[in-house]
Amino acid sequence: MIRKHYILVLLILVLMAYSCVVEPDYGPRPVDTFIKYYGISGSNEVIDMITSNQGNLIILGNEESSASGASKDIVILEIDTVGNLIKKKTFDVQSLYEGDSSYNFEITDDEAVRIKAINGGYLLCANFTAKDDNINGLGSKIFWCELDDNYNIIGKQVISDTDYYWEVGDIIKSRDGNIVIAGATNKKEDGDNAIRPEKQRYLTKRSIENDTVFWSKTFGYDDVDDFAIGLFELSDSKLGVIGWTGKSGNQGESGINTTFAIFTDIGSSSSIDNVYGFEFQGDADLDDIVGDFIYTETEDVIIVGTSTSNNSVDPRSFPFLFRIRKEGTLVFKELLISSISDLNSGGMDVTISAQNDLIITGAYYNYEDSISRKTYNDQVLFKRTDQFGKVTNDYRPYQNHFGLTTGDDIGKAILTLPDGSIAIAATMDFGNSRTLISYLKVNNKGIMKR
Image (tube, helix red, strand yellow):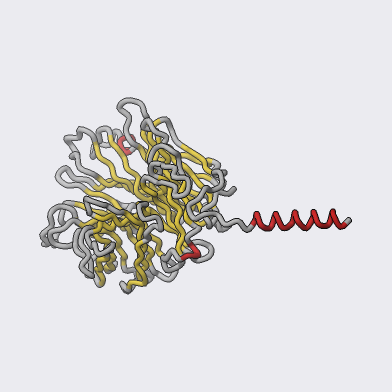
């Protein structure tokens, strides 16, 4: 009897010891148990992901068939939280305007940019270029439309010109029911007398019902390019615009820097126009490119992106995080330097976890496992920080990578699901010019789960 009791106690101790084994920071992770793929034969890529009006997930992307002469189209995938495909819708700008004498576009390559949920449907915006188009010009143009809940087009518009180009960065529906678009153009609007080389931030307010343009504005800094990538409306109806610029930062940072501006509801009289950048080990010549942002319930903005040094000898790349109050006050700015000195990475999107932490996705570039020394190409990044954007010792275990052993994989969008799980939409590269849209579900420690 004593012997049996001894064996039982010994077994319990062994199990307890096993359960307490600490996994190395960058050691082997559990086998991928939840990753699903979608796409056609050819190229498929993720652009954005949101929650649908029905509580499912919408992945916005592009697809291009491997067939000769194929063009790139916009694709919407609606999936449930376990990855089952519910609906798929594709859009080809050329086909949408076929027979329209106002445009009569030639074959177009369409680049999805944003999808936003609104009451009763969605807003979609994209850039497109027309091949061999002598009528409408060859520069980039903006396409945007309103969709119903089944992704049928209710109304659509194009912003184009034979002599100028436009690029869209974001789209919202304002409280008065009209549409505001932010992006960039090389056409200066009336009243803009600044001296700029080519690209300036662009802001316009329009009505989709009667094709009315209420106003269009261009703004930026002299002698440098600017681009607006994000847009939000404050509770006082002022407009917040996030972007990048070639102007030096408020603290003298060179390279490309991040911009945060607040405008009146008519797109003029900027009350705040701040420029933020980073330095790394005394090097202030970094390109700080915005990936995406979150507009919080307290009207703060959390911005994620990639900071890349312009050092030709040892170029480095890291994700960054900003949190900015609507008054323009900087809450924090953090450069997320890897604990592995030679590991470069970039940030594409950020979410707030159920624990109020921040979790970002993006890419590890040319990833190498520090334990096994196994090498990959680019891998999908999972990195968790505290609510102030810091990777303290408690958070170092919550970093992971996902992907294939060949090809360049990148996480493009991330959301926190109602059950606290984390959804990542990524582009996976299978080689031979074949990429697929993928959906990964992980827990808040970056471990795959179902």
